[in-house]
Image (cartoon, rainbow over all chains, first blue to last red; front, side):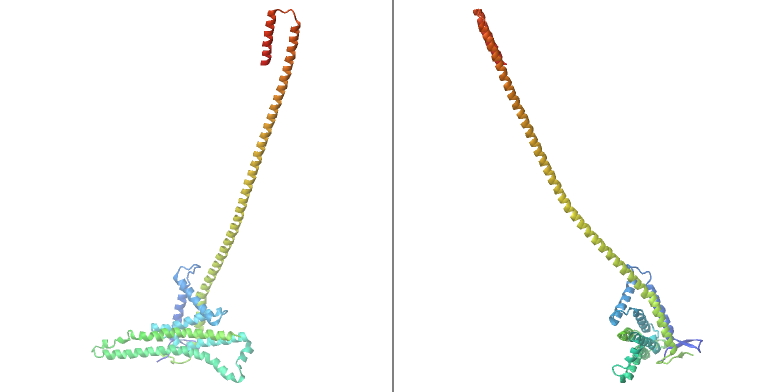
Length: 241
Length: 170
């Protein structure tokens, strides 16, 4: 199993590699933005269009989720959480269209996890001050400092690997299944002496969809929910004095 | 020749692109989704607040009007009663006045009539007295005239009688 394909290189700084991951991300971002623009076109105080109701409902749900998880007074995080959630779920779900999901790239999930990490540290410094933030690592007793550091660093790593692992594993299993089903098709149809018929992977039709429900749909939603939830929980936790 | 990254690797450029993309998507979603929706929600909230306020105002106005009108109606009833009462009183007073005036007038008329009757009576008595005294004088003068014939006498008596009758008739 290969990693993301390098599609081209930007010829600066010794060639910046642009992988499948990045290009897929751009495409999906464009779709997301287009959908956002479509949903919020011609908004009315008295909504008459279904799409406005849907957009309001989605935004309202997000606000409720953030308020329920982080408590009141964290409204400024809503757009970021929304962007993260949308980016994650659309990336993972893109595997349904045969695209390589960019969430199956560790660099991407690690990038998001590092943003969360930075937000946590920043919020912590903002609420406790630099002294309080540094002192936090010596609590409850100073000799736990190494453990505190490890746990702090472990957070983004665990977030990144969890998301990456789930989606990548789903992708691997799906492709393995496709391979297996192709072999099975070739074996079953092998009795027919026709090269064209032999090459039809008949069992690939329908059967992978069953597993796809779990590996693509379910994990996509779950991981998007988990990464947003953990981000909110950690940031809210850091915001408590 | 297709190049691939390793399946599990941390590619710095991908990382940087990811950050950039996340920030871009964050900004774009904020601009195209969250801001317009929040704006419209805010607008709706304001409108609803305004409606509530105006409804409240209308309600209090209506209540005030109702109170006013109830008060006025009560006053009107009282006034009408008053008017009726005074009118009645006045009418009663007037009728009493009229009746008493009429009585008074009647009294006046009656007393005048009585007075007239009394006057007439006294006048009649006076006249009668005058007549009688005249008669007596006449009779005396007649009696004194001796040279009167039988016939004349008779005639004179008849005349006297008729004269008396005439006097009585008067």
